[in-house]
Image (cartoon, rainbow, N blue to C red; front, side):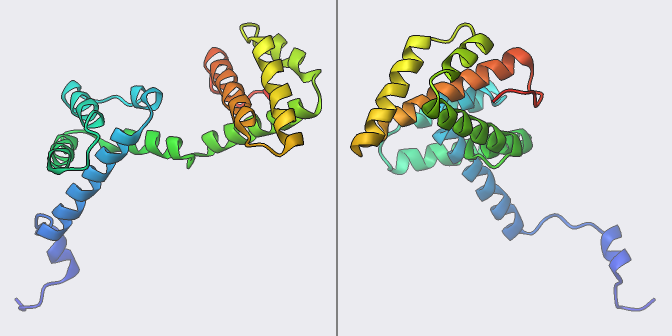
Length: 185
């Protein structure tokens, strides 16, 4: 037998990952943990986590100073992450960043709806007919304030608030009607 090993021989004799690979994997899990800590509450609730990990994330959120205690807490979260399948967490984080196609489509749909609403007040009634629980007065008020901001060159506070409200309406409609790509605007 020759002293040279072939690729097939190496695959038959699996070796544990190198120390460097293990460190990279642990650093990635700790990074996912840090992203979990930074998630808004509504997004964090969407992630299925073991109770111990959820408590550790909540505790880390309460640590406002960037000191050794927070660093140790993040390392602890990284250790707890080893026992969890990271893929669902990655998917929720991707959606939170807007990386998913569905999330991007929803954002574009809401932006288009906001633009159309600013151009035509009659769209309020269409929105109200599709989502009867909508506060029509609040929508009308935000629309007027956003138009006034644009006309006066002010900061777009109401413009952004209008987007948030329309996104909330869209998300509620999506949960009521399923996540299918229906004819919502």
